[in-house]
Image (tube, rainbow, N blue to C red; front, side):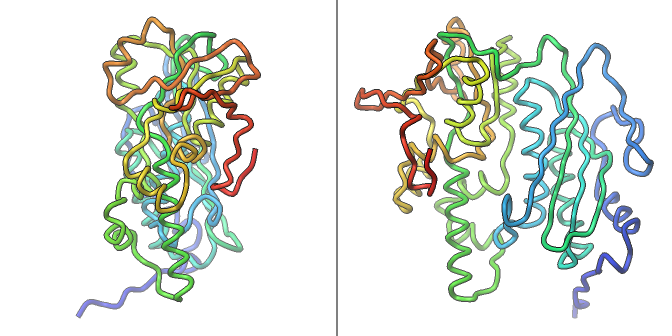
Length: 356
């Protein structure tokens, strides 16, 4: 017989014992770290003639993630990706991260090791180093704070405020899938709660919802669209403005236009929406176009480019031209498939329980 599983309380080994256990789950994947975990500070090798980019995100249990349907390994992985996405969206290369945790006593040492397995997998996949952080007690749940450092030459950094009138608006991948994946997972949680059933493992949920596996993965294990980034580099295309789609296409395009003091026109028929997103939208009586516009957590690249690059962009299946930047900063419009032009600023999205 297998020995019964014993969860180690954090109090049994203390803060420094926990740090040692978690440190053993981490490896280094680039040579820019002179000193990582284990001293008062991490020491990073500066890259000559490059600027340093810094971004931080805070993820709170019950707000940004739910352990009912997300494994701790997936939570660790996703918490890294959402930070790396910010650096990639400015055309820079992430290099180092620190991760700090506030943990309640409901979590064991082994639980946090699972979290760090996800962190380390993301670090391995994107060749970054985890170089430090902190651990503290929390009265309830789990809080994760990650800071990422990246590097890029000054002239290659892309900001939100660089869009120009008549620019093409381009997005990578597809939109709305993560939001529908979240709706599916939350529906499963509601069923569990109503029937007082035990928590389902993620693979059990995926098996039950096998027709929507893509949507589930987009929510629990997002990826940065590196193929789109590499395509732009290979073709020497530098966008005028760029952002990652984290808050939703409409909100993030608004960020670009607000900073650039311009407006936009989108074309509904050009919005890239996966068939599973359309199918799930029918199940939830949600307009799939609204899901694409407002869903969020797609972590795709959204950028504007000069019209002269149109033919090159059209050759890449992973990129889609979805609209144009216009001079009137008060207009945030979309041309529907019918040809009707509507103001997105005045369009509510009651299906999401939100209003403008």
